[in-house]
Length: 273
Image 1: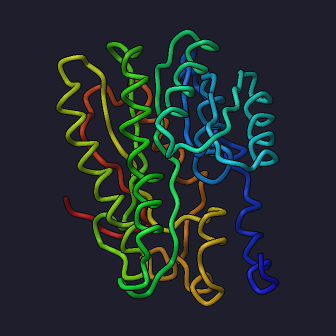
Image 2 (image 1 turned 135 degrees about the horizontal axis):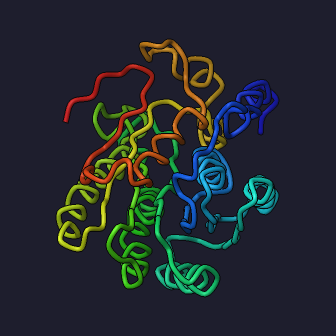
């Protein structure tokens, strides 16, 4: 990371859960798989789930240190954490995730499709074919792969939660390919929810606005980071611990009549549709 960006790292030092967040056994006895769970929003969701009583399987690409830190946080909440390392764009790896999670927990009640990537490009012509393919391979294809494999073992009352983005609704002039994948996630969520309604498996999504995550700091320029989140009505970017409770709500029985919906945690941006 460049010296100029280093000062923004303090935004990543916030804890993934509020000290005053009191778990109330909303997910007691449940097991969850969370992709991209080693840091950022995924880490916050994992720790919130653990405080609510769930065991967690964390899928991550390569950052062993972050993954181990998340595992420690989950275990400090008294829950089990399984780490699964690999590239989600590989269909065979997605099958391995399902096999390992089932072997460890015997049942998966919650799937959180959260992993994603983006690269900043100011012009459409600068998005190479390789970047375009990689963005779709990471951001939407695994939603199909992993969900399909885990659905073989899921049953009535189980839940699938997808991470979309406010960019799916308002667009992004410098993240065109990323925003396109997030739009696909919204459609995937709505379509799969209808498809699984008869099986009583609920499918919803969370569409965060600007949130401080390692992905943002690594991908954006210093000038972009200076302005990050400032155009939100609340005048700032949010933190993962401010998003994660939405995933708790959608995972627990309090949202039993909610499916095919997208929750918007955007710092005040009004989103229609």
